[in-house]
Length: 261
Image (cartoon, rainbow, N blue to C red; front, side):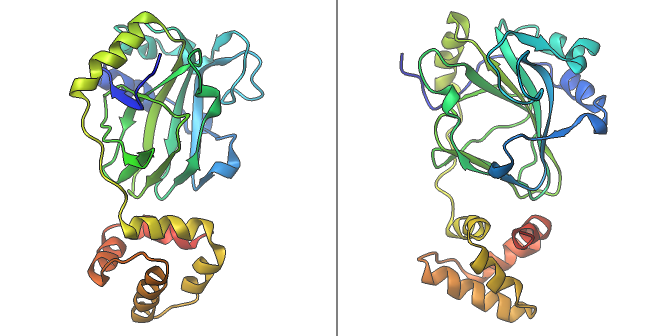
């Protein structure tokens, strides 16, 4: 059957309980994500359920799912999801730090009618986090449960000064879950429009070291601003001086991450 690119499921999770369980996770439990080529900054996770044959607890595998220590030792995780009859094969907490970026990629293991279905439950979801799926910004907020077809191109930018944490569940296809995906479509918020020229230029800096170095060498603010506008215009990306200054002023910490490559 054909599935939509995304859907906010009409279900309820116990967000306060999930946040309590999250707060109990020791800082030392977080491990860097195994796809090191896919991100910049802090992208780390904690495995709650993962395959027995996974190379690391955060890695994918094909064997039977195993409940890991954080899940077994804290029943709040299971209790908070008590109203969701899911066949969970993987459950992970995924954290993206301030200024962190997950580069555009596709999860090909989620492609096909019999592939696992991935659900995202935002736990900590600051406003300046952009989750882009197929060129559209997903308007996810804390406590919601979203199906996302991540076999499609997607990426994430945390332009905020605080961390983003999602509970990510991979589940086997089943009638109840398929029904919830369909029933959620009418009430799913409309995604944001295409990214702005300034956002496209910021993303370009991540993949073009020479361009980044050119701007790094400028220490005078006026020269930096003028050169940024000129280099962007050469690439067909037109935005105003005011837009640039606002981005630097309102998101200085995450903006500065662009130059630390």
